[in-house]
Amino acid sequence: MGINIHSDWILRQLRKPGEVIYRIPEGGLFTYVSGANFLGEIIEWIGYAVASWSLPALAFAFFSLCFLGLRAFHHHRFYLKMFEDYPKSRKALIPFIF
Image (cartoon, rainbow, N blue to C red; front, side, top):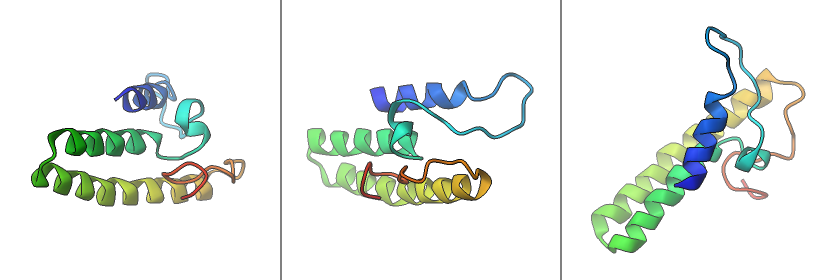
């Protein structure tokens, strides 16, 4: 949950009121992945599935991984196209891997 809250805070700080420009998120897990907020959410749901040990929770965690993972991939691709100086070592969702 901490990853998710911190990542959302970083995203909210990117723009000042009234701005409509895009900026590269930096800090926290955004140092390693483009979708740090999505990663935090996925970890939360996997943790809930493990804690509750139920099939519906596992199914929800799996579908969260599928949908949010795809969103992270698309955000990563957008950042690479939008910013020439976007860090090439940053991955889409899983640090150092994907």
